[in-house]
Amino acid sequence: MLPDETDVLLVQDNPLEVELTLRPLRDLDPHCRIGVARDGEEALDYLLGRGAFRHRLGAPLPRLVLLDFRLPR
Image (cartoon, rainbow, N blue to C red; front, side, top):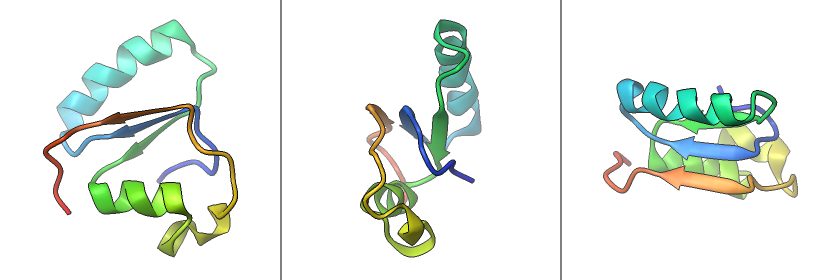
């Protein structure tokens, strides 16, 4: 589940890649709010405030989006 507000949005479907990316990010800033979207559709819904993330409409966007280019959906 994605938090309502994030500083960094990681869009990655591979759990190992998620862990390898999150570790150094958390080491850099332990207070950074990081959200993980598992596919492109979930990421777009989160960013655009659609579907399950409709309550986020108008909410601040992440400062950084790290995107895997080979994503399902």
